[in-house]
Image 1 (spheres, rainbow, N blue to C red):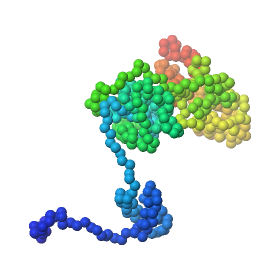
Image 2 (image 1 turned 90 degrees about the horizontal axis):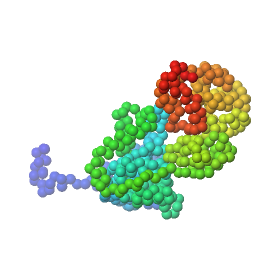
Image 3 (image 1 turned 135 degrees about the vertical axis):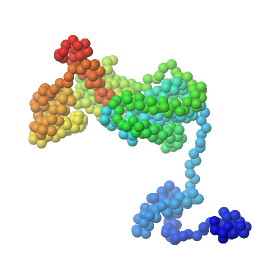
Length: 488
């Protein structure tokens, strides 16, 4: 400290901190002084106007007068006005949580984490349940915010928990709340589910996510933790969905272990579980199969085998898939479509009729579903280059029929080779290539054949599956029991 400064502090009657005077003058001219009354008029008329929108309005009204470098100054001035004269803001009221009192749940999209299954993008959501006192949590994979996904996820969480909280809170899920009704009452199925588990249902107000803040805020933490675990793992790809589910379950176990002390308090006061779970699946009876070989389920269109045309079938709707039943027998299982107004047409169900009526192909409503892979689409485009539209359709449908009756993979390989070699494509040439296709070696483990017959994301026609099993069964016996060296 300089001697003069020390002498001034010693001789002065005030503390050094009291000598400093607040600055009441501007260091430069206010660029918005002339237009501020106009801005105030707009703000007072519509307080929700954002500062950046008002600044853009000023730039349009006074071209060249307010450069972008002055935007932050303008935003600070608007912010200061709101703090002094603006409308009152919404107050958040912190809550005191009691053990075993409240469980909260919600859905969250996982596309930002770029998870893949077998190298293919896995577009999915997570149902997320948490106890608000201990923050114990559970997740389950789903693909939509349906009642089936909610009911399955909630029940999985409760049975892992081993007890039932007194209340359950969610946002205004369409699966739980009739959002179009005046009183926004609960759906009967949701209310029945809550009554079965003796839980008092609660919902938050529309567009008030903070009212369900315990689970809403944990979404971000959960995704961040999953992201870090994926980075440590070194890959976002999983061989199967089961492997991904095990990864999530292991992660939840580690996170819940840190909440053990408060969780033990919750376990002491949780209600008892009922004897069994509720069947969350929806049953729809007497669905007519139209002449288009399609049915309507949940405002979506699905194809079924054409032999069912004119009959009535039943549908069992799961969170992830739909089963089609006829006469008490399961005839088909297919992935459930997300949303409404969509369609899923299996070319195998209609190809025989299309081959007999090739003229219907060009303007067929679901024609794009007749191209199972990009190679089939390329083959059709090549056929259209040197044939008429009708002749190209006739030739392509024969190729597609071969894929339905023989092997889609073998036909695709033949098409891929023909396209790569710039060879002429025809049904006869593809049929010959498929016949000459090198067969896979005999398997030594039945699980190898299981992997060929089952795929979680593909539609399964049970009748076709029985035919494949009938053909492969002698080979399976040979491979397993070594009764012969050559497959029959």
